[in-house]
Amino acid sequence: DQQVKQNSPSLSVQEGRISILNCDYTNSMFDYFLWYKKYPAEGPTFLISISSIKDKNEDGRFTVFLNKSAKHLSLHIVPSQPGDSAVYFCAASLRLYSGAGSYQLTFGKGTKLSVIP
Amino acid sequence: KAGVTQTPRYLIKTRGQQVTLSCSPISGHRSVSWYQQTPGQGLQFLFEYFSETQRNKGNFPGRFSGRQFSNSRSEMNVSTLELGDSALYLCASSSGWDRRIQNTEAFFGQGTRLTVV
Image (cartoon, rainbow over all chains, first blue to last red; front, side, top):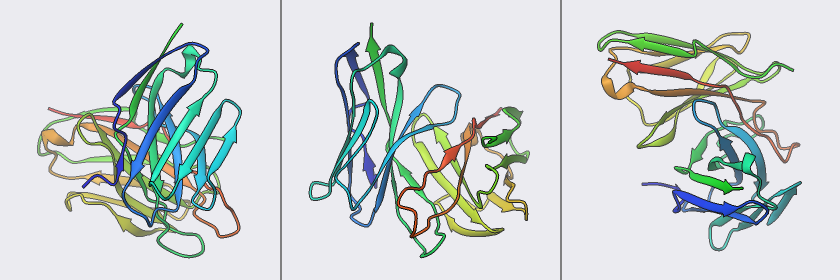
């Protein structure tokens, strides 16, 4: 049972336009969401995160939107650049302990973004 | 500040052998998690250690084990290797969840590419 889903395996966008990557989740207990970018043969690089108490978080060209009622989040990249071409993973976290808690991430299967010059 | 270091980067083993992978987290981080990435399953959580204790474990067989040392460095071991264990193994470090900190992120190493032949 896949708790975090990225339904688009790939996305192509023209340079300078907006890239929108989508993610859906099923577990309403998830309370923290993250986006990671990954190049082949490298570890994921953290991009941006959002707590479940917020509905938007912005960092430069990257904005994450969270719609808790729909159990949906999206990552917007504006403007898209060729260097943004990578696989993007959506991840959700479930805090299991109070205090300094356990950190388990559940990942989607990723969306490969290609930004065309 | 040094990042997460995983050794070795690449490893080739034969079926039935065992393997030990190493991870040094970011200085000051006490939580270390391990993930397996395969083309078919994406990134899957193996286990998480905090202060030398395994606090959380994913759905993997007992052949997969780990430990954490007092300096927070962690090792994972896979015994009786199978062809299906071929994957990129990623280690992530985090300071651990803290109520006072809204945003905590897990930072990944570059991974160890294990090939079982």
